[in-house]
Image (cartoon, helix red, strand yellow):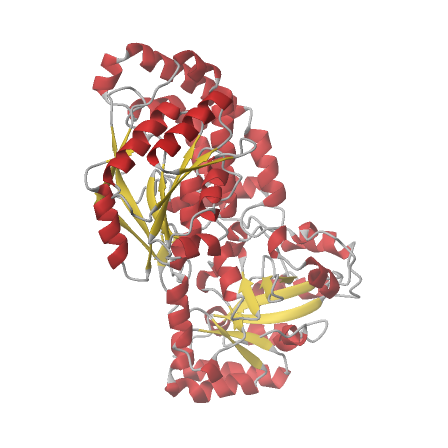
Amino acid sequence: MTVPLFSIVIPTFNRPDYLKVCLESLYDQIPQGNNIEVTVVDDFSQSDNFNQNQFISNVFGFTCIRHNENMGVASARNTGIKNSRGKWIVFLDDDVKINKFWFSRLLTLLTDLSSDIIGVEGKVESSGHGIWDKEVENLYGNNYLTCNYCIRKDILVGVGGFDPFFKKVCDDHEITSRILPHGKIVFDPELSVTHLSRKISLFSYVISSPSRIKLLLDSEYFFYKKNPDRYWQFRICRTFWGTFSRIIFRNIINEIRRRSFNSIIKHPLQFLTLVLSSIIEQIFSLFMIPHFLKSWINNGSGLTWEHFNTSETASIWKTDISSTNILKLKPHLFHSLFFKCNRKPVYDLRYTLNNISRYSSIESAIFFLRIDDLFLDKKDLVSDFCKIMKNHDIPYLAAITGNDLKNPDNHYIIEKIIESNGEPALHGFSHNGKFGPFNSEILQLRNSELDEKINHIPLKNLPFAFIPPFNSIGPQQILYLSKRFRVICGGPETARFTGRYCGPVALKNNSWYFPSFYPFYANSGFLLKRNLLTKANVYKAFICITLHFPEEAKDGFKNLETLLSSFPSRPLPWNFFLKRKDHH
């Protein structure tokens, strides 16, 4: 049986009148005898509405599938994906109608796209002049609205489809945040649909204000929690907390500013309904502050339990714990809220180490040493550094950029690093870049771009450890890079993206995530002044000491030499992790 180029999926719930308009516009453009699939997924509409949906679908020769319970729009789209055979899945909503030449444009477009393009946004035009009729539009792209959106099926299946948590909102942006690392998404203004005018009961709209704002905030929080490194791409604010603050303090103003003056004048009753419901939403959101603060303090964002091999993590820590939660850092709430003013560390690893030591059977602290920013253009300084490290016989992880690793002129100095007990680690490629609000070289790269850069490094020079520049790396990238590197490191900046886990923790494929945090992410002078190595020896835990080469070089490595002599026990070599269930 021939696999169709694309399949069309339309979720619906209790809106047969809208669905009829949508399917009729499709039927008028699809040529007879075409093998294009159109699947309507009824998300457990009321019986009479479902009967109408099924009848309408049958009249036009389309498939209609019904859920046995109301599961939400994300689950409905997943059902459509599962029951579609097309190479592309084209998502429409039941309240749009396709515009002239939509189908022919779609056929031409998807036939000619290059393999690196994984998604296509279509144009979404609004209709009607009511207060709510301009809410759903995508006129210039980068809105990623699933009411007119095409995604390659293999990509959707590869990322696990839509997240069923999202019942009504955020599902489109959340799936986009997960597919973006896999390729490009383009906008095509000729692939156009019209969003039908909304029919809203004013009384019901006001009454449902608390449940509506709760659903919105829960969805926003979960979206941010899953994708803290990419949330800012879809919102005005960088974090959920910025979005939450705008609702708490500016909800009424924001809702009014989104409306045109003409629509307000023409629909005064709708406008009053909007204002009243906005006030209710703003008040109700205040009562949700404790809920979100508690969740954020306890859980953080990014990596979760499901990403870890908990039995291997428990084994290395010599404990019978069934949860990795004791490895989580607890944020200092005041320092977090006022970080821009006081610049004090939000996380202090010592509190977590105290907690871990209650469970761990490790006899005393196990140290690892990491040297970041070991730029090889300063060959004389690097040579002096290597002599010191060799004399003290201290193993360490040496963070070297990809550009330095692949430069033939650096082979000699890299050999010196290895001879001085150094284990080279890939420290990005050029150690510069910006991704929105974050200093980053890695976050902005698609998987194919990461692969290309890694593949340019000669295989014999490719390390088994990866240290992200600026410690900026997202949860998806940790999981992806763990297929190529046995150890993924991080630092204070990584915490916001990775569930605030310290380490080492084993990932599902038995690679390791091992970040470094304050006060052990510092410089030798700071550690010596506070006698931190001696004090840390009481912890029954693994501790990664991270120093920065440029900082240590400022005093000719004098503090570094003193620090190396003050380790209570010799740090372990990083190939320790290669000996645990080797899989690469």
